[in-house]
Length: 113
Image 1 (tube, one colour):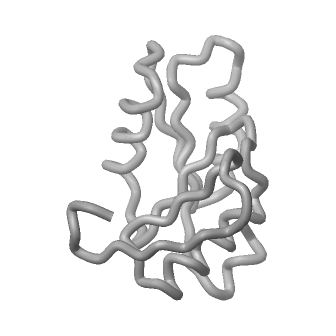
Image 2 (tube, rainbow, N blue to C red):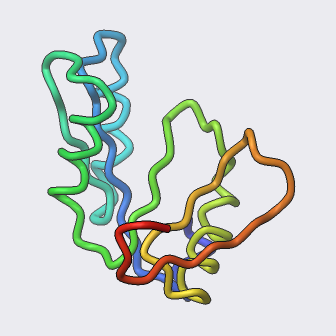
Image 3 (spheres, rainbow, N blue to C red):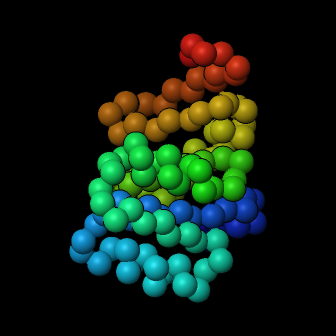
């Protein structure tokens, strides 16, 4: 993410969704020296949807990129997603490990895409 700082002002939000293995403490330790890293905690596991809503209600950016902590996508994908959303002015850009090739589709102001 630091390689993107000359092009994008970014923040990193971790949602510790009720983990009991020290993940929250590790995230807090990482965030302690970084003003653009926020750690949010659920004391019980509310599952993915609630974790995303919690993060979205606390983010301040123009663009939102979601990644699971298990790194299903490498951090390099963040740059590609941001470049695509800026270039196409799309409301949403999605990457999928299950889709072969690269396909771009822009949806502006429409309920159906």
